[in-house]
Image 1: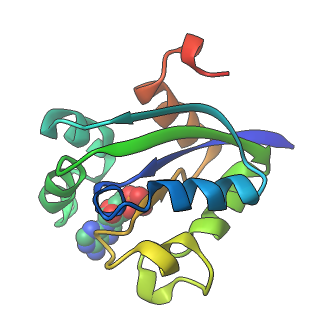
Image 2: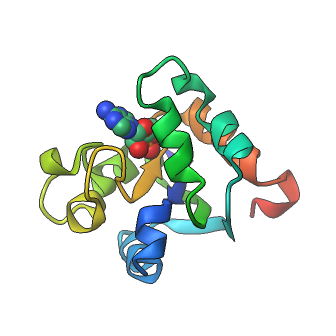
Length: 138
Ligand code: CMP
């Protein structure tokens, strides 16, 4: 089934100049970009986006990191998009990510892991709507 997922190229990858290379991998893997913007999250916005993790010990570090530099947010469409995209990006911890995955290529640690991918269709919708109005979702 054709469905959608949400992604963010995180500040570590952005500040190292990897945005173009990551978008090419996404494009070459057959994902259609149906919304995209580059922006810089304030601490308040980063805290809101990751609110589900607010009880985790790494929450403060995550909010600091995600507001350190620009990100590129995008909505992607493909058959089985959520699962296929999580395969393309690899494990949260780059040390456990498969060869050729985006995190294996560009991430440095479990916190600074280059890219986000939604973990379910419901979260893909919630995360997409956080960044894009319906008019901006093509
Ligand atoms: P992501 O899966 O995109 O969304 C949750 C984020 O929390 C995750 O990427 C990491 O950036 C971060 N994260 C998860 N586990 C840890 C951890 N153990 N230490 C620091 N950051 C983490």
